[in-house]
Image (cartoon, rainbow over all chains, first blue to last red; front, side, top):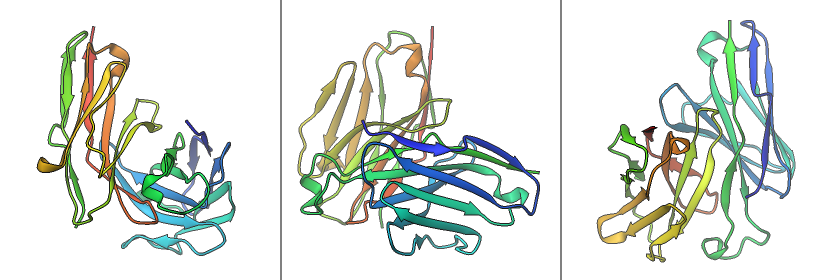
Length: 125
Length: 114
């Protein structure tokens, strides 16, 4: 399958600092990337949908000024946690959708699969 | 509203046993797709399978098999002759719409003991 690289894998920071997480699709172009948050022993919760060249779409309850998303190229999206606080400590995981080219009848394409990065474990002291 | 239910929170089996992970979904969409992902202790999600709503054929891949039944809105996953390396959390997910965002179930933690 396609490869999605997420960096860093782990970060420990002091309260009040900002942390940037990168998500790269290595062998395909991803017009859409997704950012999820996962609390211990819980499921993945979608935070935002990131579209290349446009503003991200945030899920209800997610502060867009707190979690800045930039998707400047077809292979890179970044999530910046601004002024991080201990309650922001969590596992953040990105995914990139391998659409395989044209957005025609997406359900019939053999691709249109989300591939996930390895995740970033953020600990805010 | 879209929803995915994985009723089994944790399952523990002994190596070589067969195990089935249940997934029930709810959607009003007529076209949608379903996924299974594996999350080992390392954290990354590994894609296992995607199934379109109009394709009810069961699928087998090695020791893995999937049973998709629209009549019961279920997409169950069976591991035959389980191995210790199968120990992980398995997530079932529902996707739909042009954006392709996924709705995840709460996951089933599978522990395979030697």
